[in-house]
Length: 295
Image (spheres, one colour):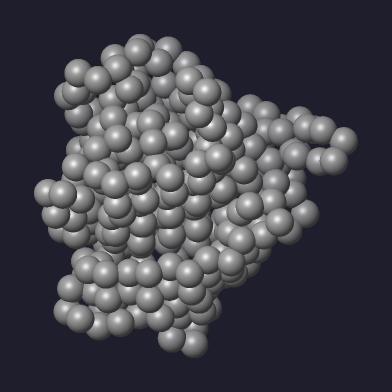
């Protein structure tokens, strides 16, 4: 059973605990990503949900008060070994003429396909110190999402692979100079997760490569990114070394994106949430490549 219990909050006013999910249905070519973050010391929470298809990017951002994993019509509920993800409300489609409201419904069961992975397996004490302003604790897991999505009255069944992130600690979206969180699922048995955090004092790399039933910790990684005219990622080359010394060379290209701005105390950052297509050992995979860039 999924025994989710909220963590005891730290003393900092920006201490936060969040859950994030994404999935991509290859057959329907539909991508969804969503997050609910709770800030108990402020008595507030924040949420977003976005969906992307070849002809549409639509989403919502909402705030709320109190605890609980629901906000703005979005809800995460533990169910069995996984999570029931639901939404009922309106998303706004981004067009050149401005936002267009779209009625949307989602009812998806997200089930894990590997054991939850703790970033502490990758990070030294110095790395923990450098990451302290972003979120000191990260648990990562990939899985399968099965259910139904309705957009603008048209309902479709979905079955896709995706990633789950559970993090807690101080969360300041404007603290990093750069943040990359990249994940890919080739199939139900093969996936990777990589994060690269750059702050003023240095960088931290963490993640896993899952093959043959095992999640191996990332020990070293480089990411060479080509950016588009808007400043977001367009393509990238990844070189990962896992804990057994094996190298994994992976290329990715961005298919579509949603951009979320974050502002606080005069600082501003842009979060690019992109669907990327990957080539890994000659096989094709999909996943979210998330880039947070300080302006």
